[in-house]
Length: 315
Image 1: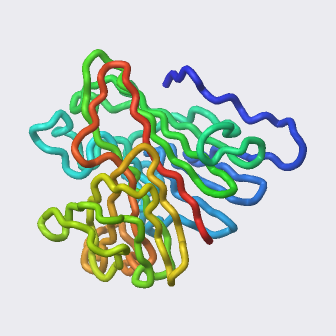
Image 2: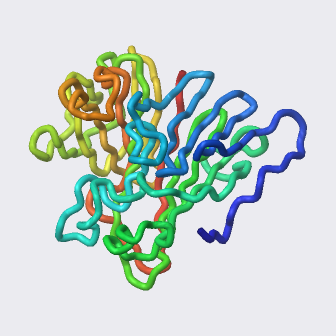
């Protein structure tokens, strides 16, 4: 897809080791001189690995398909332009659950040393990978189901002190459209029963385990003791943290978006998903997902939306 500010290749000049990027088996892999790395599948532009200090931060099912045959169970799939099953009376009503972002082939737009943004320090400190998806790249069936002209640019920035993932949405057509977006992030933990999710404040949430009833967060932390499927709306605090054994494990900072989904399938639901392995893998993962899913975002022709997350691992 066309992009006016396509990043320039990383310069080979400079002293000392430089960030490295290469493409293999349908994925882009970036590595810093420190050894920290990130892997992104071109199918779905799904982040499937992020290692810091030699340790993996992301959970991916042992049964996940990484060959482009179906969306990845695990990693950071991109939900766009609808979250969950779309309403039948909405413009997205003919699309599958979670839309088409996670099961489309994205174009690799290139890499650059990141000289701006929350994590950027320039030089060998960070590297940004850009991926693009537009109306022209969709299947004919998907174009018919959602016939809007759009452009998506997904930027994944790897830095010494974290990872940043940002989705930019542009309306390139002549009519307005509505959408939702979510970064469906699966985080690896040692034991979810020893974890809490902090920083939800007193936010209102939709509890999908309790017939989608609206609830109010009444405690400063959320403990995982069973199936959890909650959509938190307009969280006032910027950062939601996963705390393990009383110590910070991962900080998830919402950037220009205010909603979050917390999900863990627990025992029975994990057993019922054919691509969720091992069956007790729910013990080692927790989804803390940032997005804009409370209602719809509307873009007029020529307008742009941008939102994402800034992540800091404490491994």
